[in-house]
Length: 250
Ligand code: PEP
Image 1 (cartoon, protein in one colour):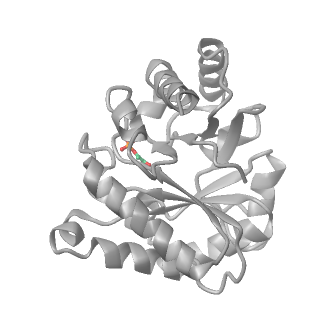
Image 2 (tube, rainbow, N blue to C red):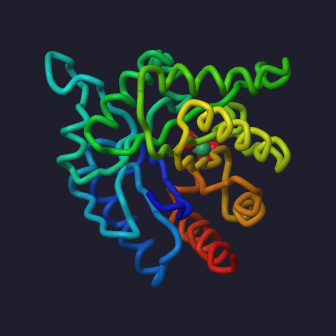
């Protein structure tokens, strides 16, 4: 896996199939040349198949079930996701943890299933405000990583999205020092688990076109996972362009 930065748009429960297709084509028309960034769209399941993309654009699911098939009403397996042409699956998003009871144990099962199918998890972790205020950020992140990757013996690359829960959809972003410290810690924890591993750490939490330039320059930030600002053509295109330009200057 390359070290190209990633800009991923998590559309959550927004955009029907046609809206998603129109959005992606508008972004593509705006961004005539994207060579240094991997752009990922994570539409709702209903739009995953029909959204046609080619590199540098890719598709991700927002969730998956860990079993291959079975009596799990309303669920979607990784092989079904793969058959839609998606290459990534977001897993462990704080909204899934908060509203749908996604525990570290379930995250672990999902990551195993995703890796077994040769897709890439976008593994979300992050502390709540009270955990940060009580000085638990490092231990919370470590536990989420170790439990999420439990029994996954060999891994050559992983994408982790550091998303402080208090910064998601709130307009608050972590500051540069908090982000650099968290990302370094994540890289260290993962590197202790796997000797030779390519870890990319995305930042997520109220990224927008006004703060993206500052955020992408923070050491150890390998791109973004974006919610709100990924829904708007102007904002999303402008963030991709900022990351592209930043990478070109390196
Ligand atoms: C997210 O949901 O992953 C996210 C980062 O949302 P927002 O950009 O809206 O804070």
